[in-house]
Length: 89
Image (tube, rainbow, N blue to C red):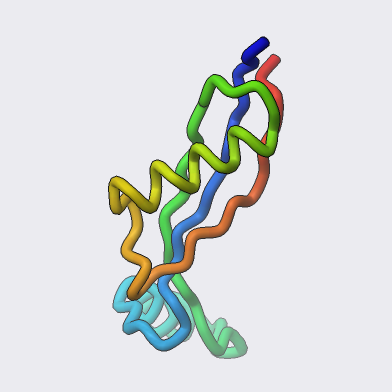
């Protein structure tokens, strides 16, 4: 029997990739407001996908396949991290 799973993912720039959003937040916002102790900021994207699947592992596999096949993220410059998979109430 299939259930609805909530899969939360984050796509973030790889460490070697240029991150102008993170750099701007660090330089133009944090440092100028006195938070110069922050040495690095990396930006990313958060997605929450509801998916019908039989098991938690099956939900994870489907979401990974979707993200890779449809190029929802760029594997050259980004990492895909699954944060959490929970059963929807």
